[in-house]
Length: 85
Image (tube, rainbow, N blue to C red; front, side):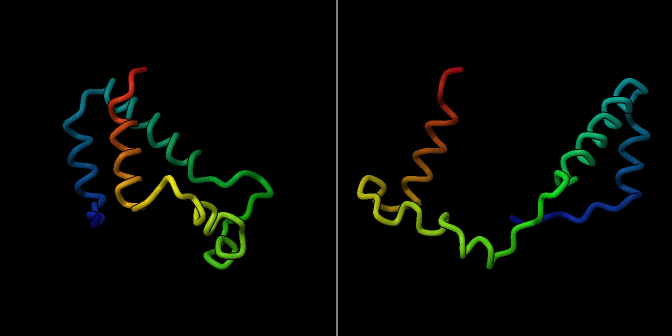
C-alpha cells in the first residue's frame, strides 16, 4: 500500500474549508497523534534483530490447525469484520 505524500499547502487548504467546530476536532486529533507517537518512558524501539531474537518469530510454526497462513489470516479478518458487538 503506497503512502501518499501530503503537503502543508494541501492540509491548510482543507482546514480553510472547515467550520470552527470542526477545526477543534482536528486539533484534538493532532494532540492524539502526538501522544500516540511518544514512546513510554524507559521503552526502547525494537529493531528487526531484536524481533528475530525474540520468541515471537516462529511462535505458531508447529500449529497444525492453521494450514495456509494467508487463508487463515483472511478468515480471521472476515470473522472480525462480521462479529456482533
